[in-house]
Length: 358
Ligand SMILES: [Mn+2]
Image (tube, rainbow, N blue to C red; front, side, top):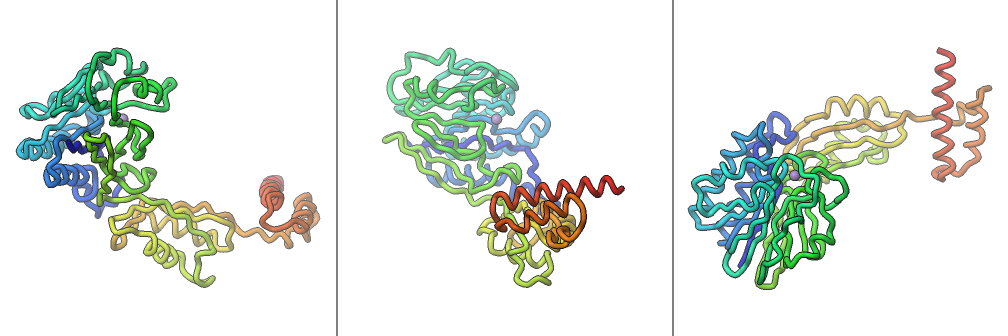
């Protein structure tokens, strides 16, 4: 059997796109359409969703409508959907599944439940509330026989997380062949468990390519299938990227991003770094480039982290504490660890001296 696996769609969430870029065409709704297309075209035997399909009560009406639109298509194609609730949609699944006999929410109210799909048993647990501070593994049914797939939204970092904390050992201790997990938005796979990850990055920090997982239950093998959705990227730009000293920062940025943009729409966070004589230019550019749109990509945020150029020889000629330190630094190897520590100290000292004068 082929089971398509996903989680953390967060339908209804608006992601930080510029005004001219459509949420409908590039946000979670698009990822959901692509997943439904894939399920239908690949004639999968089932779709598994490990929680947070719908974002939250606030955007719930829109998310619910989008979700049910896809479920209707899957229902018409005869594809069963097995899902558990996460911390965002803990109270929304009964309504989402209403009128669709092939859509099965599992383990509502935090009680483990199993569902038979062909020769496979699916064991699922759903969040009973917005938070759940105990391990959800308590009450796991001990008597499941045969091949089993586990479906749960949980926090594997364990400890005192309010989001169903679990240790990997607790997953390994159960007679489950494969665990499909939700909550962590970064795609990840290790041992018997995997996180499909959110099928579209929900903010500029959720970088990297996005995918769903096809689970073949014959050998319990998995295959990542990339989704052609919006991708977030972080790019660092320094003075060294200038073609010539006089190049405008705007054209520098455009040149670098042209080279970095992928085949899908790319949302950039641009960081200006390093010590430069053009720190002010970078600062001005950072303000005007926020939310700038180009063909094939946009800048979500431009951040100026550059530091103004420091003329150490000039400082060394003075008659202050800072001049003494500057003379020491001139004897150091540029680029060495002590050199950069020296520069930081010098900066602090200059700041203090300016403060005293003011
Ligand atoms: Mn979650």
